Image 1: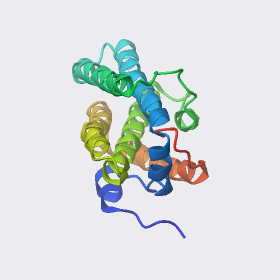
Image 2: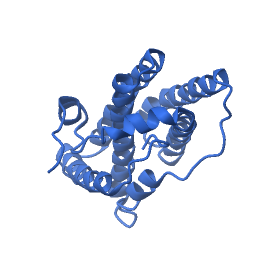
Image 3: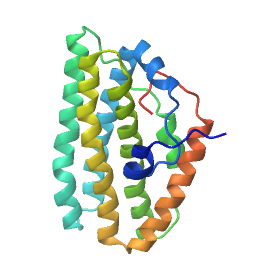
Length: 204
């Protein structure tokens, strides 16, 4: 039987399956690993936004909206890096992101330019939504009050990013098309989450 959906997952994010509650406990035992993975998540978010700007330079509204996100995501990277340094931990090497790679398999790579653009926006929205949900779990479930506050800040930021990518898709494409494809993405992600191993050393 599936876990009951919490209000934040159902109403704010639209995600169809909440994170396994065991994840927070596992993450707390491997906080150094979580911080390293988190740092790289923020770095990849910044560089992906730069790539989206470069590839869609004719879309003035997109360029305008994503430019400050690059700065914000890089600022987040620096915040996590500072936390690692404070704990006398090293950043370490970037790991393979199994979750994101499996999401990429669902993208329409041979579709029309509009279909490819839509999937680029929606995969970013989905990653931000799941990150937000994970940060919420950490902000509520960690024993360390300082780290709960630390992740509360990230949770609030990621929620705004999720809606931004949805809004960008709806700015350039018909809303009903965006919503239909978004529902397909949510269904796919639900099945992906069911099949994923619960690991405490990864944000996703």
